[in-house]
Image 1 (cartoon, rainbow, N blue to C red):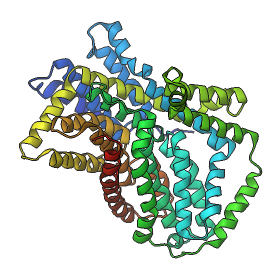
Image 2 (image 1 turned 90 degrees about the horizontal axis):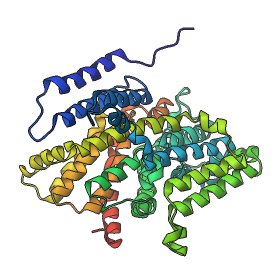
Image 3 (image 1 turned 90 degrees about the vertical axis):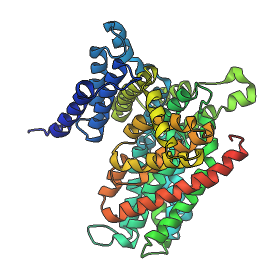
Image 4 (image 1 turned 30 degrees about the horizontal axis):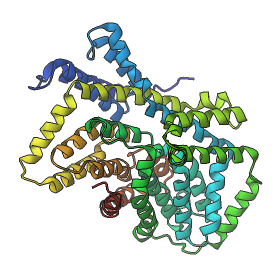
Length: 489
């Protein structure tokens, strides 16, 4: 059988053309060294290929690593250039995400993820709005330990959402999406960006944000897991409380009362049977990870008992392997984890050397000069930076590509224009997830839920834009007040 190629020649040729044009045609700007400019050419070409989906992102990452090594843009010595090209694989934050994805495999294998979802629906499912909150709560509980927002929203929660909708005879095939399915699909999706913003380990690109913030501030701001979680707690909860209500107003379901949903959830829980030993072990490991990531041992016993976040993830995976909840084949088959480690390493490596070679500093100064020419104060400058950063996601099909391309420069420009570093970092970090609301290609979760057919394209874009404004307002107002209470500005 002939297998369809995963290569898109048109977009691949376009990415190559962009790379060659920047390398050979566009003059190197004053203040930028040729190696930095050539690395930028490779970087932009890689981002263009990712946006255009010229090849699977892991394959593109390996090509980028090979090009950095062979061209010697980071070091003229071949062996040193190869070491530089592979340096991203030593980044502990990348392995934190990879290990966490492997751990989250247990949610599907043991059935614990589905059990959590149906448990909340049994509690709150008497009304359609209650089912919406049950879906949101399930997302929130799973978020700290599922770094793949696609796996969480699309792999775990979406099948639950669809089974509930179908139980009410609500399906696109029957033309009955409006009964309850459209609303639940929207809640299913829009819970995903909110929870992604609340924890470093809730979506794969968040560690990039941590890295860029640390680099731009000379490591004066280091966003730990607990610092991020505490800072995002109140605005995240406020956004989660508002979201089902706003969607209920924007896309009201025909069915408002759903007493049978509780019975349906109970039937599913009965099918799952009593909680298994593997689920109990998984729950215990998750509890241990949350305690270690939150720094509880160090707080109770002293700094000598502090555990690195990545080391904690390694311990968690080791416990699941030793107990038999996962086996080594499960780890090897978790392609998403290995794929993430590969492409993350390549992007982090290129972003790191763009910073070391002075390109990010040069670009941030250019952005800063452009905004200064408008005569705006730091508040106006930050507002402009945030809006441009958020709504430029209409041109991206990957949050990772967007964050890699723009976060570092925009954050550095905002700091240079006088923005308070910590609240600006947190707001820009939140926006890096809020931007997922906008389109049906904004992140990996969106094509899964949009593809189920419950929501039309026009409704998706319209509601996505409204939700971006709602979430942004919540993080500015509630987040701003909360961060003031925490003493961040």
